[in-house]
Image 1: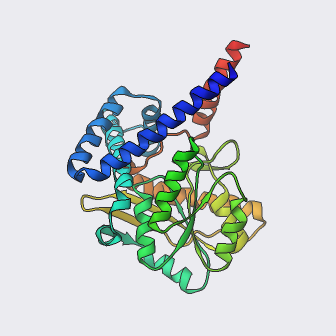
Image 2 (image 1 turned 180 degrees about the horizontal axis):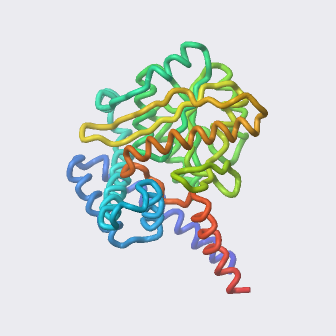
Image 3 (image 1 turned 60 degrees about the vertical axis):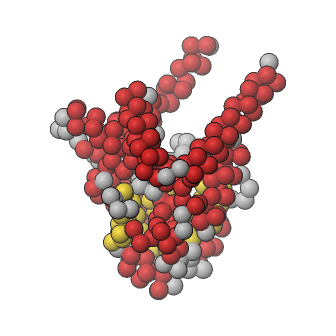
Length: 317
């Protein structure tokens, strides 16, 4: 039976990988406008089906817009969010075939001077991003400004799919480290920062139970400690970056460096992460439809999700 389950797992993993590969080829081969139209209709269907991911997106966006937004307006925002997420995937599949010269002129940026000032001063720079817009486009723009950078990638299943995404980002010019497996990433990132390099990290979702509890849109949430801890350890500048879609292309907002009072590593990590949360609140609230967070990050949602995972085991016991 164990062998049968393992075989089914391998077959399922292979099917997922082949499905992504087929989608990757098809989306790159077809004209963009009809592909976006198809993706939009599929997103609308997903919003109507109201699966687990869409339900969580609705819960998350309700925190952003507050209790006074009428339900029909929230439903329309969720639909727009599903369409935005679909656009992200279409663009991700197409980016390897798009030259930077066709992408970066369509990027509108505010706050680039904050990156430049820190970099020109010889400091390392940590750019911390929520799951907004298209962060791969933001990476292409950063490279076009002459700023190579290092990032990390969450290990996906199957491993072949993970390798596809790593190779895709390496083709774009990113240095990509695996978040799990192999050597620890933190010392490598610290080396890059101490040498005055740039590191890009997603910072709005903590994995497991480790994280820093912060106030986010008025409720306790858990954010990852990594970006703030690296900044506290290395003295690198910590800047939050919001990204959103525009009719013409993409918008990017870079904050001034997030500061924290002097103190020990643990306290500075907490204070800097709280500063990241405040920056994210402003960036997400300005473009909530482009925040692609379909997982629980608030403490009450995380507890509910954990209870649902444990329920089958409790019933079986």
